[in-house]
Amino acid sequence: MASTQDLKRRVRSISNTRKLTRAMELVASARLRRAQLRIEAMRPYADRMIELMAGTRQAAGAVRLPLLEGRETVRTVGILPVVGDRGLSGAFNAQVLRRSFAIMREAQANGQEVRFFTVGKKAQSTVRFRRFPLAESWTGFSDKPTYGHAQAIAHAVAEAYVNEEVDRVVLVYNSFVSPLVQRVTTSELLPIPAEALAGDEEGAAIATHEAGESVDFFFEPEPRQILERLLPVYVETEIYRALLESAASFFGAQMTAMRNASKAAGELIDTLTLAMNRARQAEITQEILEVVAGADALSG
Image (cartoon, rainbow, N blue to C red):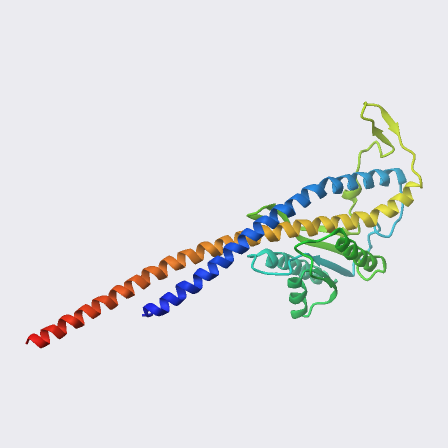
């Protein structure tokens, strides 16, 4: 049985840990709110970008552009997992990596090679530790990404696709649902899926004016040239959306994990305090017994 002093030291140590987890929970909660605001501000832009690209694609007609052209034979699959640079966030990193490795095994079962493009230190270290092919990695900004980071990632991935280093690119990340729920999301990044270009059947050359009149639009330069410029921006936007979703999911997961850790620490402190009180009572009882026994011996 542990002594009273040992139990006191354990209670003091766990109390200090609980202070730390509570502080981390508060910080994650504050940063989560800012991350949510960034997502809410970005979503209308992303939706408008998809609408614009779909309309331009319809106006351009049948075009052949590198980022749209799927390969008849897929030999190499690029996997882009987006995770955090830090841990202490429950299963946040593990569930994305687990899904990425499942995609890898499926591709290998089909006789395809796999190359990883990782975002976050946890993905980079895991892929390197397992000695999987790592094309490029980006770290240091997972909790506060910018559009510039998304541009750098999109440029590298698109260049690998255009140069036929990879024939397909899959994006894997945690989509933010609530502070308690982060859903692993898998999306086909390249070639750009046909669903992203699906628009109104009437085409993009017709739009509705605020007054309710139909207006014909003339494209300058040609729709094909506009679409050629929009496709890389679409890839950047999708990656930027994934980075923001992942950042918000990380703070939500960390806040929940630290709250659970604080709760567990409190329960452990209560258990140890009860054990310490019992140990102290046992020591007092033993001392009383020793005094009584000594008194009996002297009186006898």
